Every structure is written in C-alpha cells, then in structure tokens.
Amino acid sequence: MEKLDKDILKLSKLCEHWADHNVSHKENFSKWRDIAKSKGLEKVVENLNKAIEMLDKCNKYLLIARDGL
Image (cartoon, rainbow, N blue to C red; front, side, top):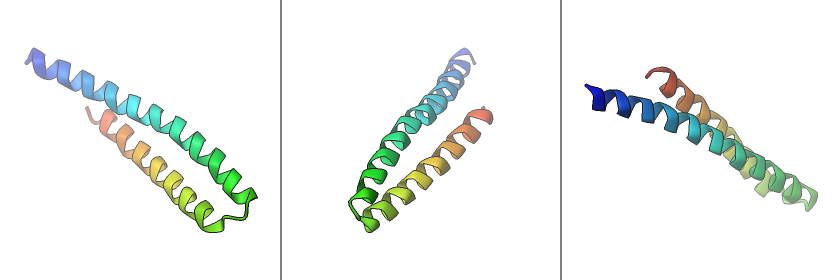
C-alpha cells in the first residue's frame, strides 16, 4: 500500500507540474501570436489561439485529475 501512496503523491505532483509548465508554453504562444498578428498572419494567429485554448483545456483536466487523487 505504501508504494501506491507514493505513486499517487507523485502523480498529483506531476499533474500540477505539467499544468504549471503549460503556462510557460501559453505565454510563449501568446507572444508569438502577437508577433504573427503584427505581420498580418491571420491564419497563424487563429491556429495559435486554438493552441492556447487547448492548453487551457489541458490544464483544466490535469488539475481535475490532480484533485481526484
């Protein structure tokens, strides 16, 4: 049972770590989306916005998973 508890604790920490790490990716995506926007690359902007939305959803589910442990 002790191993299971350690695994659960580790998974909880990993879910939080992955969510935190995604925040830094989101910041980079936003920065480069703004650069693409300034260059008139609307399709690139649209796709980066979708990627940002997906990161937000990913983080939501990672944190729900963490909370379920």
